[in-house]
Length: 188
Length: 188
DNA sequence: TACGTTGATGACAGTCACTGACATGGCCGT
DNA sequence: ACGGCCATGTCAGTGACTGTCATCAACGTA
Image 1 (cartoon, rainbow over the protein chains, first blue to last red):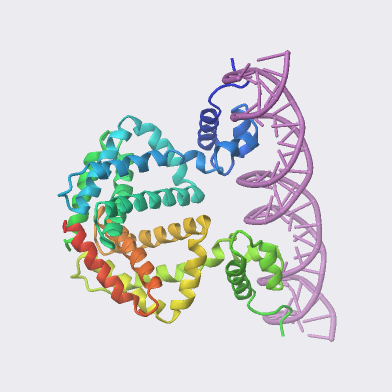
Image 2: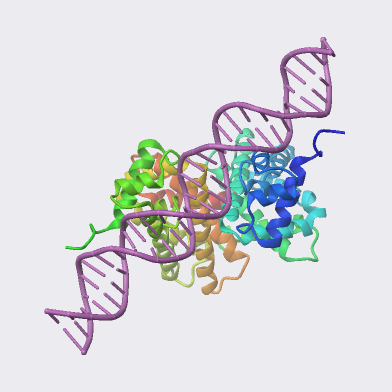
């Protein structure tokens, strides 16, 4: 048996999310999170760069998934369809997590600092998508525009998915939203 | 003559920008800003909600301008062209401010907190544009998508304008970028 | 002219996010 | 058995931000 309980990071994450839900993000101190996890404040900051990051550290996985998904699309596809395919494939990741995603989204939506952090994470997804397109030979500004538009679609599709308890498949909503984008951009 | 020097807010803003450029945002304390402006730290926080906001309080003006510009476009225009017209009209505001915009952008780009704040300000512009479209009868998700796409174009056009010292007219770049977006969305 | 009100600022103590430096003590390889 | 490793604890900071009360010129009003 170890000197310490295992999975310190996981305990901190669980404690933080519980407290953010119970009493709100601003009303929760890092000392309280650490105490509930049986650790000290200093240890919290060894695992997470700041009080917000505990809700966002998983976004690296999402970025890697998107980049791999872009690489998997056939070379013949147009940039916007490469992006659409990659964003659609995210649906599988979220399939079993509708309820936890909804809870997390509620916490984030209630606080401006957390919304800021969410936006910069989405911007980093966009930057990664644009990079992946450039590696396929797509030039700027088309690469940046396709990536930004794709993330815009993702944001809107995600909110619709969160708001619809009966729809487990985000991919479907993403597809519809890309079609809407194409219609809007065509001036309809 | 007043009890205090006039234009406290303006002095604070000037001092803050100078210091952010001279030694960087993180290396500048609010106490130093206040001292250079001949005021106290407490007074800084009466004029600006936080240390970042001093670079962003002007964004309300931009939002109002965009909303008015949307209202000024003929009813017959498609949503994406309404947004394009509104975003193009921003060019006039920036025409004489190429150099100060570039300096400000350099400061923001160098710091993650400031980039976060910039993103949430852009998101609030997007929300305002979507509202303005809804008031014209455009329904969701078309309104949100057109607004998000428009802000995405603005971000990209703005960076190109900043990077091109010989191009004083952002409107031209915005127009080209909207055309690129339309081409990308059409699968080209 | 006296006087009460207002509003921007100062002074000051306090909370909390975050950091650097050093100490502790099981674990693991030799 | 020993010695270094590493996750954690401890502690003393710094700096952003807030609440509260004091100050005092300006201004309106009697």
